[in-house]
Image (tube, rainbow, N blue to C red; front, side):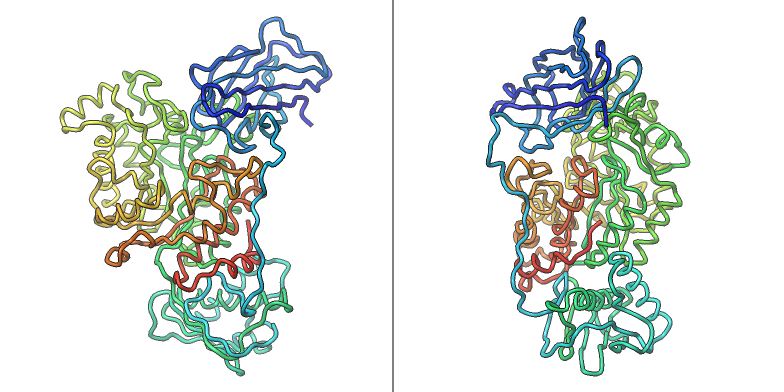
Length: 634
């Protein structure tokens, strides 16, 4: 148990300048405490002009705050040090996780861990609000399927027993075992739904003239016939069979296997994706593969791997080993200070190239494309800390800040060394990831970025560029040319369209800021993936109230609201073909344990999966909510 404990209290006010944080450090050690410094990470950040009380303010870097004990203050064993500040920047704290997440006490040259409690709002509101809940309803039919099929016509049912492939070629047998292995990984304590042999319900498979990813399942007394249009359709048909058999074996009182009838199925969209942020919180290759398995069980097919951000660079680049030697580490005695959880120690993590290849291959075996995201030109604090030669030495420090509070965090396109860096990194990325797209981020570049750089001023004059958006557009067009040289298309967040945008040919944009951007971007000629924060950001709180974890910049996104969003709802009939599909986004500022991950991500991830697969007219919240309890988690 740590020898020190930090509790934090905040008043309930509306004006940011009146918001007051009072912190109490409890000395639970055997000796007195004096001359110490506490470093804490808080997503609610102190304003530059805040009034500090009870401490000597040392520094703030994004979410990291550092305070020193006043001269002469001695805290005996069992005593407390009370300090804090009035005045914050950003948004009012709205959840218990909006205060300090982690802390380190630096005393006598030694880093001590600090136990950190939830933020407490005063006066305490006894009605803190309910935690997220998902209803359970009676089912109209005893069939388990998520996502729900496009067409279901079942006349009779049989009790659960495993399904066996008694005949079929080597490719059919391999396909069945891939899904059997997927089930075994996700439900390790459950009976196998699919086997090779002749002792279960007979399964027959054959290719037919069907569309991409499409399949049909025909049920008779003699068994099940799976017809598929391509290898992906065969895979998804087997997942459907595995799901229904698993449920019938696991809960025989509620579920059955069809014995007469037909399921006709094909996806609504070609892009059914999820993004995962591994920069704010690092998830191991094994955890990433497990997450990909849960995607595959829901017939999702695009994994956007958010590998870089201000808080850490997460994969090896042969040309720049410093990116993982320095840029993947944060905390005491690191070039990057601690952020979010784990501030008391060096927090690091990165993937080797072999691990990247393993994850990509694992996903591909489940018909999931892995889209790497290298977030540029903003969100590059980790890059610039690792490679300081990419900083314009004549640009004034702290001349702009990102929305997360990072100073001067954008790659400078006027420096030749920036392009040497990008050429080499993107070449290695292109070699590692066979997918068609490379996602280049391009989000949240602060207005005013670069404008005090003398080199940028020369570039802007020579190229006729006015303002940050125009400079970013120039930057991205050059990046697009590099990617095309490697046979890749550019993907990015919706800010790629700012300024003059880029060539729309082959470009795919993920619309995240608000739903109305979906029709706006399609009207500009971009292929669009719908991922509005107001529906598909899985770090948003799921219920009103202080106790529900998450953030709230896009409001409260209940599982029902996530499910109810129609990604084509704002598109006219003529524009719907421009919508590539849907994507969930998982940002990990607040999601730093598997338990929080499971609470926040599921069942909303499966709700997005069903929106990507099931025709809007066939979707039903009550049925989905009831079935979702059987879906696997991380």
